[in-house]
Length: 438
Ligand code: ATP
Image (cartoon, rainbow, N blue to C red; front, top):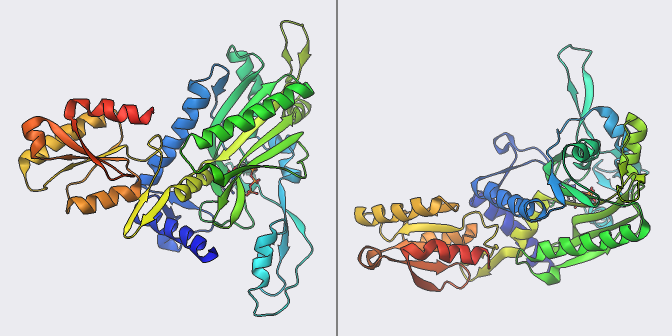
């Protein structure tokens, strides 16, 4: 069973390379640990996922606005948020081979203890290792300023809190959504794109009145909301669960992870935290800028509490790929939701050497392209083209054949059921749109 599960990870990694989802970072130079490059299919899957997330949380809600803050911030912001002092993981080193591990990852430690042919492994005492990635800004050698690549994207929201309140019509309760890159000097990057040193996060910070019951109400609301979001992507419900944090971080009043059952067991995919007024209070203290808002009904001023939802694009992408992988005999396909599949449709001329079929297929392709990401393939036989699209997760393949020329009908083949049906060319857009919004 375990072997089969590891096998699944190997199959996903191989498919991702073969079909252009994910490549090892700077591969031709031997790669670089914790960095991945996203290829043509990967970039589309990520874009669709981010667009879907943004649409649901910003476009469709009246109480959420967006922001895109800079990756590099004034280093004082990281002092205020506590990252320079306590954004760390406990590190231990194997005294035999000097490999380093996270002390809190018991399974990884146990796994390593079996790798020294019966020799008993001794470990160094755990030391806190700061995860912030440093770099330098400025042009005068010796006078450059040490700065950090952001370790998480929350801080950019907190420091802009007053800018957003003053430049929009938001009123408590309201949220700020952001998608962007983050960097961590992870001790043990791994699990393919599960834990990287460069990754992308999607977060919402939802600001509420600083009242215990409000905190509990909105924390519960966001827990359910995020679980529903995941399940709306057509994944296997049984593989997801909530896991409350046993030990709360210094900034949190409550914290839950949504976990997924990866090939190595349940592990985090997303976090929901009640950060209370930690961030805004600290920024008020360090910057001297008032972070309070006015309740126009009661005339009271207060620093709001923040209920955060934080997820990783890369980690979510891995979950979606693992969950969508299907295999039956020789056939492999990704049963990705039509909402986020890289290409919604592929268009083929039945024969690649008949100009009249190619011209008609191009006409269909060019029309569909106006509304969807569409793949084109006129190489090899139809079977091979289906196989390629199945592995990318394209839900529908449209074949232009002689019936198209005579009756204006194309053959639409469904990725999951492999059923084929005839659809009028003029009804194609309606057909696809209905599936997307089903
Ligand atoms: P880990 O499971 O690695 O201990 P964490 O608890 O440190 O993660 P958070 O700081 O809560 O993670 O970050 C929120 C989300 O950002 C995570 O749920 C995950 O989806 C994503 N994330 C965090 N660190 C990484 C990373 N190194 N690589 C990829 N995604 C990450």
